[in-house]
Structure formats: C-alpha cells, structure tokens
Amino acid sequence: MSFNNTVTIMGIPFLNTTRNDFLRDYLVPRLDEEQKCFVVTANPEIVMKARENDTYRQIIRTADYIVPDGVGILKAAKFQKQPLQERVTGYDLTLDLLSYANDHGLNCYFLGAKDEINAKAVSEVQRSYPHIQIAGHHHGYIDMEDETFAESIQNSEPDIIFVALGSPKQEQWIMKHKEKFSKGIFIGIGGVFDVLAGKVPRAPKAWINLNLEWLYRLLKQPSRWKRILKAVEFMFRVYVKKD
Image (cartoon, rainbow, N blue to C red; front, top):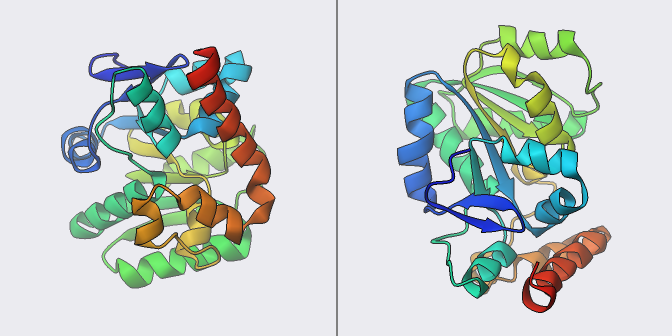
C-alpha cells in the first residue's frame, strides 16, 4: 500500500478520503483497467487483531487500500490531530460496488456466510441489481488451503469478489489466493451478507448519525459484546496508553 495520503493508527495506514472519492478515484479506475485490488475495511477490532498478531498485521499492510470502517478509527485519528475525512464502511462500499457493477454489467462473486444466508443475499442482489452478472457464490465453510476451489472462482472471471468470512479469515484467504487471479477487486466485508439477506437489520439513519450504530448492533446481537470490549480496549490504548 502506498503511504501517500494516509493516517497511521497503531501501525495501520488508513487512506484519507471520502466514500464517493474512494469509489470514483481509486476503485473505478482499477475496474476499468481490469487490475487486481485488495481492499480492507478496518474497524477497531481489526486493528487490535493486527496489533496482537504480527502475521495478520503484515497481511493487512499488503492491502492496496485500507479504509476506516468504525467511528473509533475516526476518533483516534482526530485525537492524533490527523483527522480522517469520513467513515467508509464495508456495507456502504458493497452497495456502491453493486450499483456500479449493475450499471456496467460486471461479474460479481459472493463468498461467505451460511449457505442459506449466502443464497438469500445473492437472491436479493439479483432482485435489486438485475444487470449484475453473478459469477458464482459459495458459503463460507471452506478449506482455506483449497487451491482447486480458489481456481474455480478464478475461472469464473469475476470483476469483484465479495469475501464475507469475517476477520482475520477473509483477509487471510484473499492474501493466499489473489495471485491466481488476473483481475478483480477483493474486499473483505464481514457480516454484510447477513444484512443483505435481511437476517440482521442495518441501524436506522438516526443511530448512525449519532455514531451509535455499535450500540444498536449490540442490542440486536448481544453475542457481539466481546467485540465491543475490543473496541473499548482500542480507545483505551489510543487515549490513555497512546500506542
């Protein structure tokens, strides 16, 4: 990743851009020129995992672009007196890429989540974006080392590969297999398929505007409390320990 126009937080360089500019100036040119591109949407939990695991940190840092998916990242940047322009979430980027793919008839592959969630998400994509070409889709219960499976995805010639395996698996899978591909935007999107499939609701706009999306998701999914603790630890290290 180029370190121009980035803000580094705990060793992770975040691209300082807006959501619209990221799509227009960074991703669309890659798609138009049929280049490969590895995008990480990193929240405080991912940054903490990278801090605790050197191998994972090195994988993250090989990404072409790392964008700030999390209010905590923006607050940390502001505390460092290097403010980031805007939060760029995996969910929003997914919608942006789907819209662009729909307008240009691009091929998309959908990897991750449970089989029924994956199928439902793809069905909703087909309904909402009828001009997208579905290169293929597969649930997330895969052998990370399976070269034949990765080659089958490559043979479908996708322009965009949405990888929803959760961190760190999604970044590990992309790093291990992307060299087989001649083109394609690879983006790890965590639980976005759950939202597309309607299993997990997106926070209402008012909650998002108040930077309380994390609380809304915790109320809807109490099992996320361990992730919230990681976010709390992240903020503690930013404000108190100044890592």
